[in-house]
Length: 268
Image 1 (tube, rainbow, N blue to C red):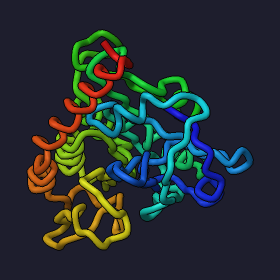
Image 2: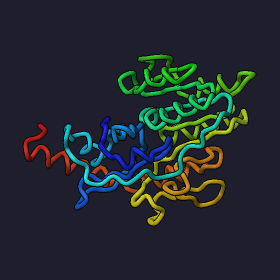
Image 3: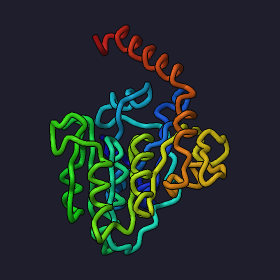
């Protein structure tokens, strides 16, 4: 997690939007990260990420005062916020980060907010206290049962949808497979569901086509048409298949980066 000085982005950012981060313009890849919070007065944005590849690992090695050469944003369409009634917010793992500004805005708009937060283990659960501050109810689940209830997020989601006063809207953000099954759950109860997609992305302005997904049988670009879509219309299977396209290259880049750090004595 880091608060990054980016006053122009901070002054314009809205819930649901993201930035493209490029650590070093001469050689770094461009990675999309959803804005987890912003402070227009301080001129900062908050980014929370999980180190899974070379660029996110490198980002985690920055120290206070270090610079990020390029931050492009805010990008994407903001979340549609209004008073729906009851909104259930479902976060999986690092998906809790982009979900928090949305839950906050939904609460400020007068909605009853039920937050379901999931993680593989207690150690990987983030932002619990922040969600408690903006939610009427918070339900915690972990895959291994180390905290909260041992379950997937779909279990309490189904229970919430089964209530006589079922939610008026669901917002799910997390791994693609998690969002897929959340949408399958809410569809049974005709609960409108919004998902935020984080696909392969390069320019973030709709030019490269790398982030294309199929929504309702039509091709959409996550960076300009999204990142939020009607979850009941997203072709998650095709999306997940496309996201595997560069796994080999990503693993190779991370391995080379680790070897380089060991060579120059930064890691053992």
